Image 1 (cartoon, rainbow, N blue to C red):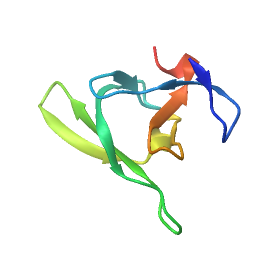
Image 2: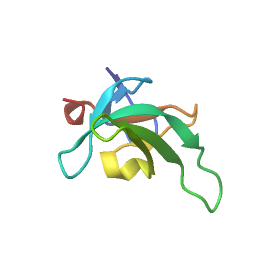
Image 3: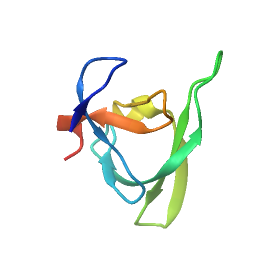
Image 4: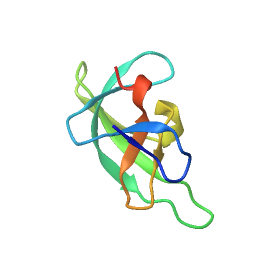
Length: 81
């Protein structure tokens, strides 16, 4: 657990294979950052849904997270589990 220099919140760094929960309380498996934020564009993350075996691309805010300056996906610590 660490503190995000951008927002100051206690955060968890999400790694490939970690399970994360979206705002609908659905669980997903994190695959990676698929698009890094740049001027005029938001970043995106790719996740995997075990049942049905499909992947989706979402904005990090779906998981109450963001992509930091190092290109890592982080979410508030309490949101992880």
